[in-house]
Length: 286
Length: 241
Image 1 (tube, each protein chain N blue to C red):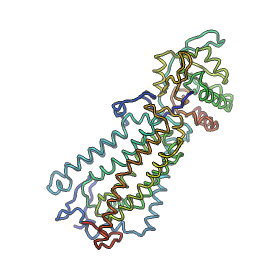
Image 2: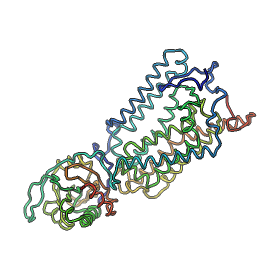
Image 3: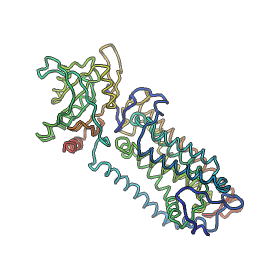
Image 4: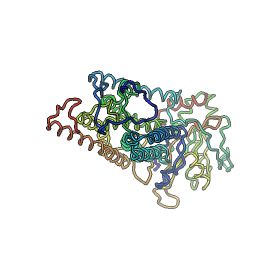
């Protein structure tokens, strides 16, 4: 029997079919554009953080723990986008999904929490831009489009056998996750609504596409994506096992978001029972 | 100075919190932009999704002005040259062989003659593809098979095998050079279903690599794509331009 192994463009380096160690998978590669983007973002944050040290108010608004969280988010982004794990995308759906979930569900909440409290005026250009993208309808629509379109077989297959596997799709997952978590965690209080109810419902709805996809992967009896059919997978896993593990990864990655959504909904209900008006901007919890 | 008058910095610059330090305390002009009617938000959402999906389509088109069916190497990279043994034209003797494009576009495949399914299928598809090229293009197109089973695939056996599929070059590369060449192309292979020293199968990468006449690795096709002959032909003709 001959077993197919698909191969993403530009792949190579790791022996396909071997059992790569964690060290091999995490060793870094060098894509200049991605490194440049990461360094620019990191430098921008560090510069702002150092500036904030110059005043007591700045230090209060931008505590050190936020910088530590940012460093963690930056490091995880580096690993998810610049490790050798990228080269075996075609040989491990689970590893591919693990990287995407780190970018969509782990890095974004950390990055949002790492932001200092910014009182951005709603009528400035930046305020209007954020007001557009952080509109829950817009964020939900973009996130759902990313999750659903790129996990339908046509979109997913294209991401494996085209250039989108290299950098574009991970970038979309990261940006989509940032939008969702920015709506949920509300880092821009002068722009975003306060209602726990709205944010709770949003979080719950935003989690549904991922849970749906994860369920399909978990319970499907056949491999759904042609590039992985009969693929020679890492660690002697079968393609179907890889698909099921990917389902678990996606489901587990979505759980913190769902838990937070339920927490916000409970806070909203408590507020309503305490006499809040429960309106779009009501239901505030002090 | 009101919030709307305050200049915004491109660097994250913390503004003082409210005097009581309550981060949730929002001024009276908070969130007016998000207090828009739901149908306006819906229109914004539709616009955003349209721009996203349209942008992706545009990105792919810019990345690949020609919409290649195969997975492209962007930018193209030099294909690893290799040497091995092939059968002579008469098939009676073996002779050394060094792979070089020599002005020809090459479809390179790693397989073995005992393969029951994917290798013969791929070579059969490549044979059909070749017949769809013009006579001039056929002269400038070659199929090369590198055996991942050098133990059993003699040069003579490889020649017979390739002749059966309309011609081409079957190359025997002994270990450990074979593993070096395979690795250079990102190809994996390993013995499987071993019943005895001479009875076994080989699991292997089934991609077909297209190398242009200047020796640049341009794209690859997964074997699941090979049945779509028209698209394969279009890829080859574009690379041959």
